[in-house]
Length: 262
Image 1 (cartoon, rainbow, N blue to C red):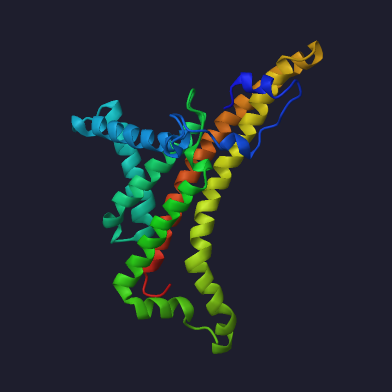
Image 2 (cartoon, rainbow, N blue to C red):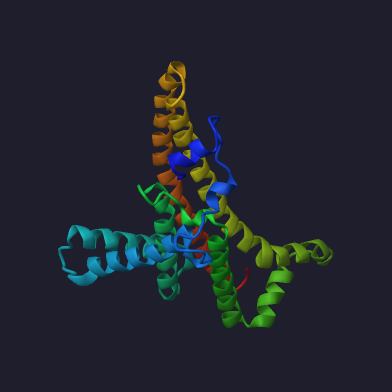
């Protein structure tokens, strides 16, 4: 979040948060690759690696609390996301889905972690890259199993549909599989993280501004802070849900690519 001294520099009136609050300057010098979102992504990789190394380092039949937490996350992705949606071939996709879920979840939760307080997925470039990975994976899986000819034919010409309908359906299906899916997958994650962080900025910074006003405004400021705290808990649920939805849709797309008819 913006420092309080920046608000004072901008004048006495309240300056509402905007997209400019997401365009953060480089942390070190003028290097564009050292901005806070990029550093948070690298930090997430370190945090995830350390957590699961520590959780599995002394694995036992009776798990420790750390091992139990790690196994719970893995079992959730393995059983509830991969196995239940992909079917008997699910195991070879578990590493990707598990990595995807933990990476998105960690970067989302950074948005409510004190001192960090920025969800990396609120920068649309990161969801775009993740959606491209998913796009490549599920098309590769479908082409490898069915062959490129049959795979494209099943996309363009749905079985059991009157031939005249292909004039309308074929372009729609091509757009859905090659444009709409990766776009909606990435934009859903981005929009939720962006909007949630923006709302938190509004109430926390607004509460601080009211606190510096006249006595009547000071009395209102606790309500703004309380609402901001309530939104923080709600944002946590959204962050977890969006990581789950992204991973679940990826599993469903892979399952569709593996199906004989999709």
